[in-house]
Structures are given as structure tokens and as C-alpha cells.
Image (cartoon, rainbow, N blue to C red; front, side, top):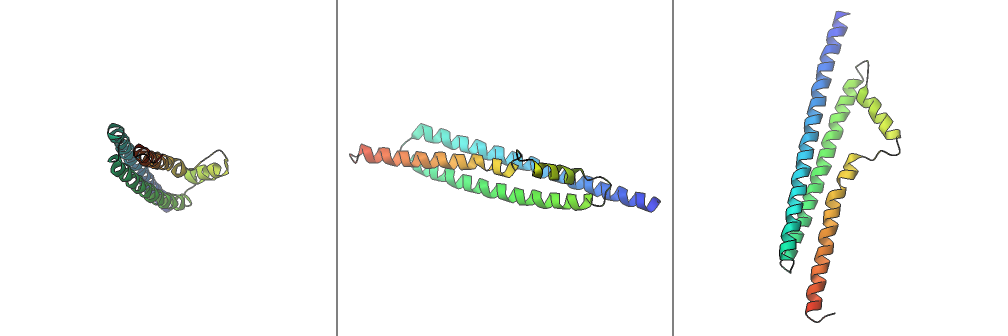
Length: 148
């Protein structure tokens, strides 16, 4: 019986370490999102100050920044997915499975939306804003030259 208790104790310690690492990744992900939000707000501020044909370069840079942001979101999703796969496999060796149980309940809840899908909304909205601004600036420049 002692060997079984020792084994369970080791598995539980490994599980706890993996959960802490997953939480650390989530915190880094939140920090990364905050950095990209701040950067995009700075881009919007810069464009609102200049608002002319030179703004196109800033707006294109904004689209590039959002694309990089989307790639980071995808990478963090993949990393978190694998971390939770490891956590779930460790849980299969434990008497209770809180993450497995939580995930099963969430997947069956029609109101639940994956956080990655929600997270991608912001860079997509910034990209749309930048595209609209690019079209508007080009249109205004074209009209100011008598093209309208």
C-alpha cells in the first residue's frame, strides 16, 4: 500500500508542476496580448495625428503587427493544448480528474466559446479598422485630386 501512496504522491506532484506551468503560459499569453493591444492603440493614435497619405505606411505596419499577433495566439493555443493533454494524461492516473471533468462539461455547454476564438477578435477588428482607414485615405486623396 505504501508504494501505491508514494506513486500517487509523485504523480500528484508532477500534475501540480504541469498545472503551474500551464498557468505561467496563460499569464505570458495575457501579457503578450496586452503588449499588442498597447501597440495597436499607439498605431491608431499615430494615424489619427497624421491622417494623410503617409499614414498608409503606419496602417500597413498595423496590419503586419496584427498578423504577428495572430501567429502568437495560434502558437500559445498549440502550446496550451499540449500542456493540457499532458495534464489530462497525468489525471488518468489519479483518483479525481478535475481538468478532464471541467473540459467535458464545457464542451457540452453550447454557451461556451473557446477563448482563442474570442482572443482573435481583437486583432481581426484592428485589421478591419486599418483596412477601412487605408481605403478612406486613398479615397479622400483620390477625391481631393478631382477624381470624384
